[in-house]
Image 1 (cartoon, rainbow, N blue to C red):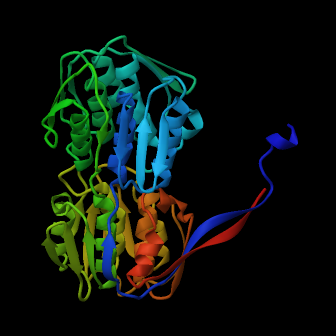
Image 2: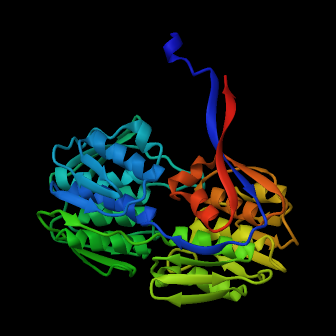
Image 3: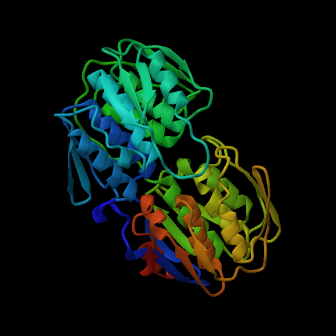
Length: 435
């Protein structure tokens, strides 16, 4: 093998977070547009050749990855300040690069819109966080029901359908990704499409609203039955994406863990209902006023039972952050994870800080301890990283969180926002040897 083809040798910089715990968080936090809503909406811009403007989009790693996928397809993607300008004119539906699609599972959302508009697409099999099995079979079954011919091989899936036709599709599980992909495909199919047992998450509703702003016809968004009437053409739009309920929830849980007083906004409080109900049950004082939520915590949290569920249940993306806070509650909490089978990867790191957590299958028994102790921690995925930051903020002593780059997938300026709330937190580049 030639020297240029070998793995690099030397030293590379890895971003770590350094956190001195024990400071209650106080102040206000501005919440960004939702990452989980931006991604499918970016994919949906492939449905039109007109310009789409998305104001206030946070520049996250996941957003950057999907923009790179779009550019590889031929889309003109321009960032103007905090706005994204997107125009998909000269598109090659077979040009999605494998190395980018494998980096992020949400990249597979380009399949539906490419097939709907161009009648064909070639998409690499997706990758993403190692938090459990997330097969794409529901996506494929739904697209076949809409009339697509699907051929898989050599790490790619090729779709062909001169014209998609409306159908009734039942999802075995209310998958968010499958619902979004099929919703986009059906937006330009002939006739009516019904998606039964559809995901009801706010991000699905936002995608439906975006399609309607482009001239689409979608009914039932936010319920278990979506009805879509396909149109021949969709036009451009200027669309404001909803705020990020998971980002807001992360700061609220961190406030509860540190005994602080923080106001988050702008938010849609109804999107936070499952979390706010559980925090109130745990003894937090919460005030909702317009598009803001104020969270106050005095003393230790009370133990609670939490079970993650598809919306409108408790969101799986807040399970790890809440577990970090409950690890210092005054009693034993029970957390059951029903969405992903491998989403307790943060538990071993919390135990290193002194947390008392026992795992039985998909259930965690979290017996609160008087305090956590700072430690050198390793983040395995996005939400696990957020949980470790919360634990470190609440702990006694200093902690480091290695592989903090996971946070950049879903949180814009997290350390700066926490620092503005009084946290002692900074990001540094640590050096590691590559052999």
